[in-house]
Image (cartoon, rainbow, N blue to C red; front, side, top):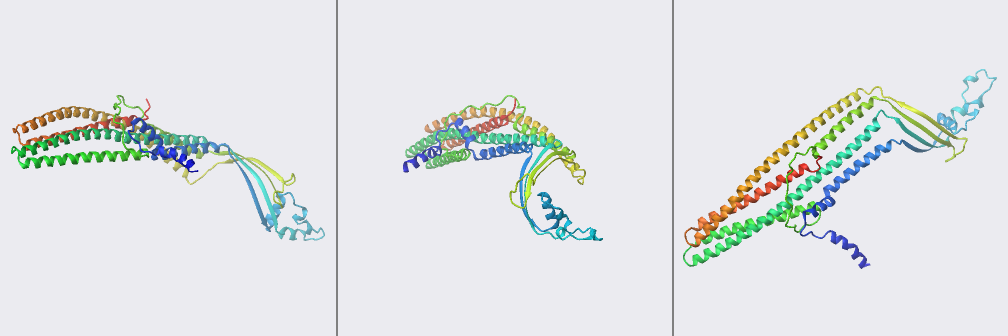
Length: 446
């Protein structure tokens, strides 16, 4: 038994094991399978799909089995019960008190008719109702349910695009933080070397104690930045763990290069959703217009009744068939108000579609402009960083030769550190712009 339970736990433990050296491609697959928000959104799409099935099912009409059991001594009920079960006699009509010799026979109040004994009555019926013509309500409702289903799937796609953006943003930010950590480690080691040099020169009388203290302060600053970088990396790993609903320990170092789309997407997800909104508005108008039209339905009933339960025989069964025509002629102006409201909603959805198209064009142009700005800025920062590294190394060499002060070296050290951080921040902004362009093109129709 213990071995059996252990075998059951093995796949659970494997599935929930922490993820190490996670590749971006594998993370994207896990995201679609395990992200809790995407799972909830997929349930919403399934619910909308069932709404479509419900509307389709209504076209088949309904069949009801109606079973009643009653007891009454009401004269109308008892008389009706007997007629319905085909058990009425002339006595039930009051003929027992009929006397042709009585000149007031028409005014005689029959006791059997007015004061009958209490009676049980059991009735079983199968009722059928089938809509034949609904003025377009059924077809419009079905189309409306299908449109809402399509809209829910686009909502899921929009949420997926947002989660992919968060996932990739975390991956690329982690990659940049790892590069920054490596750079800071090199800078930290260089600062420690500078500290050892300052201590040695102080011991030989070529440097002051202030030089050593300044280097130690700079070493503490670099150590603090390195710790902050590592803490931010751990925070991003927590974000990834939340997105994938599984602990992520580390990611693979190599990431695919991001490419910006060259052409403007014609129908982004927002445009597609706005287009479905116009369809919903148009269908809402049709649905409210249908309220002015009549409905026609087929009615059918077969049943039997009697004093005993389930008393079925050819003598007490009955059927009814017919057609029902229903046309609402007045509702206090409610139909016209609802129709006007539907017209306004449709007009609003058309403007929202136009706004979505304009917003897509604006966002695409804005992001491409930002991307060009980031590319130019990165070229400049890369050149400046290389220049500041050379200047810093030059001042360190001059300090070794006692031609420059420690303050000059640490000033160049601070400038180099600031330029490194500025360069990494510019890289991060460029990645963010590329990911935003990718999200804008997610799910777009050509």
